[in-house]
Length: 175
Image (cartoon, rainbow, N blue to C red):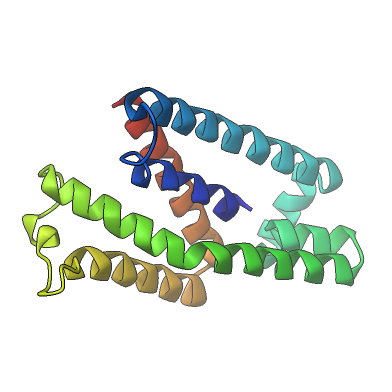
């Protein structure tokens, strides 16, 4: 579910188009960051209310870590169709954010490179003014996380991505 909140990272990318960007963008990022934390806490509380921590611990110790996800826990305590429906909704949300996230991430990588935070090679553009390096970097990282999700565990990638998104929001808002 945290992937749904990552769409808020569009705020830094839209900073140039916002009215009074120096005031509204940091406020929007902080509000988005707070909303994501509150919604995540509510979802987590609801899940642990339905599936108590000791049940989750038993699933982990029993080698059933694939059930220690929102759809997995719901699949344990609710009818199978509810878990299947949740998986479809999550797939649609992730699919909806995939291309915009790659574009926003490339804009951020390009901007970070212009500011000297990332290697300058990411500021190079093609003859048609396409920032190839800034587009390739997120695509490579996305492919790496996809491979990690397939071969290790998708929950690790979600946790890393969620923490990274929240950290970026926090740092940009402070900046």
